[in-house]
Image (cartoon, rainbow, N blue to C red; front, side, top):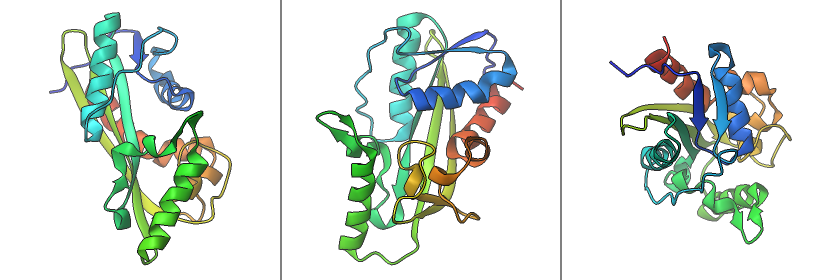
Length: 203
């Protein structure tokens, strides 16, 4: 049995405004007020895990300990099969520059590596999301979600964030970057993990 969430205020351990907004939307029906890590002036912990679940745990436990609130964190990224599932947990790192994150650069790097390898198309890929809800007493619950698809080129669409413009989910002929927010939120990796989280901690 997973532990139920009983409060009315949940800290989301992210400094990513896009991710915070997505989670706030998904939690709206439950009457839970959502506060982000930036609003609480929390530092970003060092994410030195080698898996999505390790990094999600680091973020959730650090935030719960620092604030005394239950904290939800998400560690997510894209796995490209022909690149041995890279960038995976290093999805955001591939976008790091001296002046913040540049996802166009990261998407271009992914594409160039696929071409250099002579990888056959379709370039099978998936977005992965691992949610961890941690309580101040050290307990946590883990929920993992995925959405399967392929990497396409060139980039398409200005919606979404991160690698969305090069990811086309199975069963669609448009990328996450071209998809309406509501539709993406219905089928995304985070939505998949979220349904499991809601079933485990709310229902």
